[in-house]
Image (cartoon, rainbow, N blue to C red; front, side, top):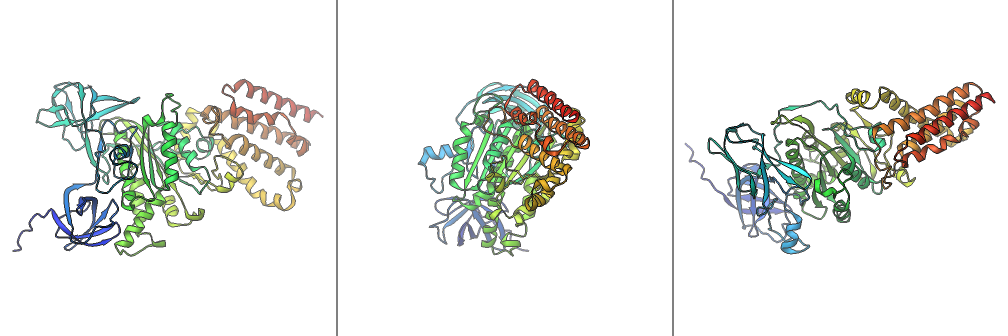
Amino acid sequence: MKKAKENRTQGVLKRISGPVVTAVGLDAHMYDVVKVGHEELMGEVIKIQGEDTVIQVYEDTTGIRPGEPVENTGLSLAVELGPGLLTSIYDGIQRPLEVLVDKMGNFIERGVSAPGLSHEKKWEFVPTVKAGDVVRAGDILGTVQETNIVHKVMVPPTSKGGTVKKISGGSFTVDEVVCVLEDGTEITMLQRWPVRVPRPTKEKLNPDIPLITGQRILDGLFPIAKGGTAAIPGPFGSGKTVTQQQLAKWSDSEIVVYIGCGERGNEMTEVLTEFPELEDPKTGRPLMERTVLIANTSNMPVAAREASVYTGITIAEYFRDMGYDVSLMADSTSRWAEAMREISSRLEEMPGEEGYPAYLAARLSEFYERAGRVINLNDTEGSVSVIGAVSPPGGDFSEPVTQNTLRIVKVFWALDAKLSQRRHFPAINWLDSYSLYLDALEEWYDREVSPEWNSLRAWAMGVLQKEAELQEIVQLVGSDALPDEEQITIEVARMIREVFLQQNAYDPVDTYCPMSKQYDMMKAIKLYADLARVAQAGGVTPQQIIGVKSKNDLPQIKFIKDYEPVLAKIREEMEAEFNALRAA
């Protein structure tokens, strides 16, 4: 018989290759968190081969040398969940940046750790159950007012539950016991959850409710469902940051989790300075009060970048478990994939396409599959909608990260640098973009907007596609050489683009457009198109039809809050002008 292996929590460094180090003499499991070297740098076990334990280190490894100790904590990488998450700004492994700045200034030193939540601050806990009540895993025990969001304190998903023996309200830190069950289980407001493990749910629901964003091109042409997944590739200068801020401000979700994953320092600085200044239009208070920011810039260690997306999605799932709708922005998944590529090359794994690891698609799938609208363990309904930005080098959508992402997500919003150069914002290309949720959402639009909405949308897309076909001829011979009917098509498509699709994020009215207004605007454009067809069939020339003056007043509708009387007047004038043209 082989001698039982003794439990060794400490080993020594054998080999160092950037953020990837190898230790020997260490008894460890996959994804255990370890402390590396004399400075106790934080790392995670990613490969075990015989006596060798391979570790990715979440901090800069410069200066450490073979022979230094490696200690196994026996714990997996986990985040702290509880009151205090909102308004926080974390790095990729949930160290609060504001706390680190107070400790050491603007430059983070190595080997420094700080808990994700404050363990000193007291929160006012209000019980919602009483002694004698039976609770199960995931049930809500009480509430804490955190900013303008009610934080719901839940029985941990790993608990068996039972009968409440004692529960008391008052001021508590996250470590103090607020509830005791009959079997002696003590429950605090703090939960720790491993980031690579999805939090459990009772049932996943069909994606049949749209995430309303107030952005006409998104809601009108390429909607995303609550609990859905979307990719938004962003070449430099195409308005990606503004689009994401619009989604954070206006989407009808209660919580926003923003992951800055490997972005340039100046871009992340812009986010960190602008987000706290943004006003939440729903409450008039700072948007940060319902936001969690995770900042991991491109000059920070790559291993922490790889962990940041898991940290963000775990925090999003925690708020989903309370019954909230959460929007998660990951900016950008390309930088995350680059971190995987670097670590994979240091592990000497067989490279796949363009040097990315062969498991790139599997990792992307694991991340996006954690989105969804669900019935939680406590029978509430919540959702996590994931919008992943992609930064394809040179705007090349054929590269592996974009292509693998497109195989997984159901919505593709293709930002186009050429549109932004023409000052068309949002610069989303309506010919390259698509949404696979249209059929699932059709019934909702019929019920909540209008039975005509789906046919109107299909008509608008048809006009835009026809215009794209005609543009080649127009560039060669000019629009006057087109048949009369197609000259009208070109004009209607221009109206759809300039009146409906263009939207000013900085205008106090046009920044958000409700579905009722989107429907009325599209209906007005369709009215012009229908009147134009009738007039053209009656012998009116395209020049006369295009010269109708009342249609030139349609763009002003975007900037008027109480627009209905103005729109009604424009429609009357339009019909009168066309009647006059046919009578002439």
